Amino acid sequence: MTLYQFNALADFEKAEAVWEGTLVGHREDGFYHVVLYQIDSFYVEVYYHKTANVILRFRSFSTTRYLDPYLHQINISEIFN
Image 1 (cartoon, rainbow, N blue to C red):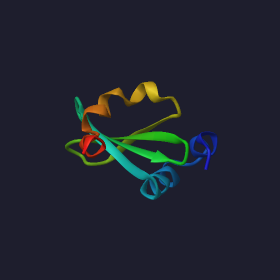
Image 2 (image 1 turned 45 degrees about the vertical axis):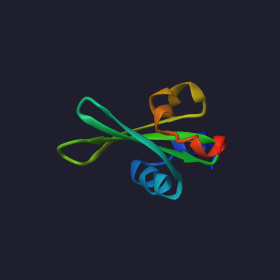
Image 3 (image 1 turned 120 degrees about the vertical axis):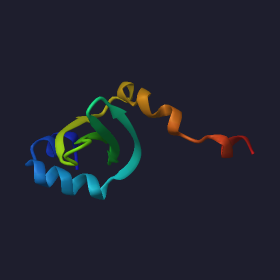
Image 4 (image 1 turned 90 degrees about the vertical axis):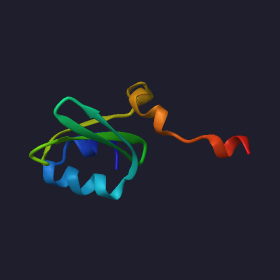
């Protein structure tokens, strides 16, 4: 699937697509719990409302510049063993 194909999906189809992706990380952002997935060659942030526990929006991107909030979660210790 491409980024453009993902963006053309309805929200319920986007939710199904991210479950097929790879979980990369998560973070907190105000009222949201944001979960990052990788699908093929792009990324999707899923914004869940913390108290209502519902998906409020999807943010998809292919650039790596939006990955900064997740970099501290990546364990690279095995590289140095």
